[in-house]
Amino acid sequence: MKNNNKSRREFLLTCSKALPAAAGLVFMPYATGQLLLKAQESEGYDPTQHNYAMGVDIHKCIGCGRCADACKKENLVPEEPYYFRTWVERYRINLEGEAIVDSPNGGIDGFPEPAGSEEEILRSFFVPKLCNHCANPPCVQVCPVGATFTSRDGVVLVDETYCVGCRYCVQACPYGARYIHPEKQVADKCTFCYHRIVKGLLPACVEVCPTQARVFGEVGLRSSPLRRFLRFNDVTVMKGSLNTKPKVYYAGADGEVR
Amino acid sequence: MKKMKLPQQIVSLAILFAVLLAGLITARMFLIPKSFGKYGHYRADAVDEIKTQEINYAGAIICEECHEDIAEQKEKSNHRNVACEACHGPTAAHVEAPDEFIPTAPRGRGYCPLCHGYDPSRPTGFPQIIAELHNPGKACMTCHEPHNPLLPHTPEECSACHREISSTKRISPHESLECTSCHTVPEQHLTSPRFALAQKPQSREFCGDCHAKSAKSPKEIPRIDLHAHYERYLCWDCHYPHHPEAR
Image (spheres, each protein chain N blue to C red):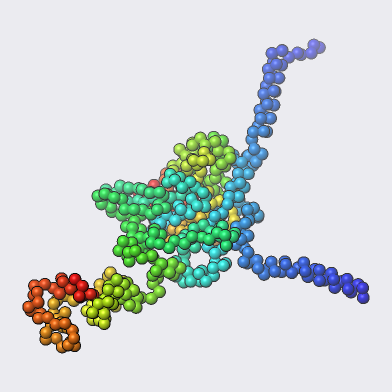
């Protein structure tokens, strides 16, 4: 009889312990979003299994500049119009076939019609620009201290505690994708939002692009949206002749785009 | 056998090199971070430091967990592929503390034209307006629900757009007249007003239908002699039709 009582007490105790766990299981779907955000340590992430790249469809870009705006807000890039990790350029091709390129404040405030321009324009389009995350990056080659490097998942990153701010990489980048951070005095550039992608989120610019002109994915993964993008489009890379092997692929880029 | 003795200068040189080498090795131990060279010519810990950067954009999937109704509405609309944060800005703080941080929502006329303002560089077919001509002064939200931007229904009354004319007419002797008594309004004018304009009367005779001496209209309506009354002018040169007694 005594034994029975004890086992019942034990049973109830076990129940009281199991109840919160069961509740947790039920409510887990609602908490996943928060967990995803709070997961500072991305457990179980294997960088050797990834090789990130981006696709940009010029035909789809409407030049709203939301990508450049989101990038600044996500990565706390200084607001002055000289510092960009990503920006949108407007290409206007005149009758002689020359490209007139401008990017007022990176396109964040829209593209006002240039005042007093008498030039006849044949056609015009927008080109979003960012770090090309080259597989053969000139910026990494020139860094004298090993502060900029290609991570194992194919993203070119800057170690800001190790950078001495010598500006070699800013000079070496053929795409103008780097700048010196005015407060930290170190090189800064697009990271593909590395802190986001390792947690399964999209880069901020891809997240907010209203027309899906930007596609983020992996080169090696067949199910990646980037593979679909590469399959269905004629893609080019910027300044391919420099043999930097960029990993930002452009669809619909004319010869004038550089 | 005589023991071979190293010359003094060689020994001192060897000691000097040994000290320098030891110094170099110790300096390297202190100066080069531990994780440097683990995966390549860089500090491996830097990758983990970059990973800890704070997230500001939460992602649309998280928004849908609480704002199901809006997500459902947006799902069926032309804005289905526009992420919440494209308009509302970074909302990670809102996910952390929903009551303390409220995301912004653009309400004026300034924001929508960033995408929908006419720009010759935009791809053909993308819906665009000329903000100066498209209902000037009205906030976009008065007609378009941003989560389902197509017009919910075509305007039922002329006053929906022509408010000023309608309120002027209301206090005039022409109050009882329908707009369509004088204007012919094509069906298409309701959906795309600028491509199918409403027609106005063109001649004096139109006003004469009611106001000429020979007209068969009720007797209390003021009459004029259509031929004697300022024959060389059109009626609306002097009389504003929506408020004819005002000059």
